[in-house]
Image (cartoon, one colour):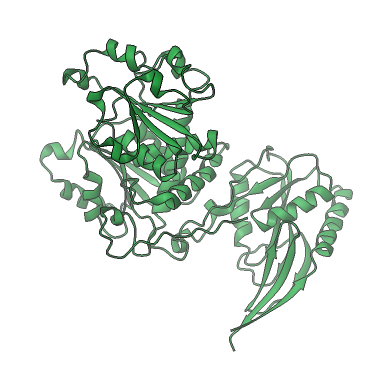
Length: 173
Length: 337
């Protein structure tokens, strides 16, 4: 097994995301959005966006452990920190943020959890990297970078300070 | 940052009787007693409970984790608080719950415990929550259940009440953080208390600074020093510099058995009044597993006072039981289990 790494640009991807969200906010399609990050990597990206977009309300954090669809096969995932959504989500526009969009299962779980807090007006999805391999009909509204990867390639995001992203490819040799 | 959980090594043919609590891979399957869990499992349960307590603060207090599972409350001894919090915990995990009050039903008709068990297993139960007046009842059931079934001890005789001790530790941790500098005093009928026994095991596992028991000689078990506690018979001495005071319920049967002269005498010497509370640290927290006898072991104004966390213990009990249920139901599964 050989492993090769390639660094992915993080700051450029965050800036691209930020520009796209700003443009949509200018168009009036996004009203006073609430930023919610998915633990762990998504919270780091959300935190960067939260600062860049100058949002007044506190950043929301979701831990989707209790909403995963693999409890029957894998059991309970080890805990990170609990979800923390201080602001009422009813009728609000929410920007849901994750680091990598892959199968779509994490986003499905996060949306289910959000609805247990209330009924948002709109949920939009912002991801740092959107890759292929979707298993559910889910697509990001904004992506910092699009990637087409091979079956043995993965994106590893580390953080929070500094945030780095690596493309890891492991091939049987 | 995610902290990697290191599973404690359990030898396959462990000589200790608590090994039955773990599956072949060393994952918690039954919770029968605190002994054998070790600080890592205890901490993992408390950390998991933090996540569930945050769920109970929301408008919809339910998560879909145990959808399709069936939890059966087998109560051979009556209980209100423990049974309802177990029931609520299971419901908030989206499991189906069956409450069997066996103190009044099948066993009175002469059905053996094992027959009762087989019948309920045939209803596709995934978890039994057992309360029994005999010590060791939950162990007995755990030894005989089908391989996919988990057993939680909700109190057996004078032996053990692990979820109560865990929720007490959880409540202390939320207020005080680290256990190592803390002085904790358990006051009252230590001898007949399964709660006290489990609390001592939990607090010692978490490396509490100093553990004290305060009670008359007749209510202290003979070998209590072996559990690593300091024994006091005087409240003024015992409460000095204490951070946490845990009061235990005094049962009236003890008076009838001649272990105590009278309720009034006990209250005068050991009842937690405002006056006695002042002997502990000014920020000492007051706990009680409930139901509290006001005017017997605790003064009303103390039970309802600013230092009391008695009602918080009840709410925390739901999150801690959700954590234990979901962790035990993860046994015999994949890599996280």
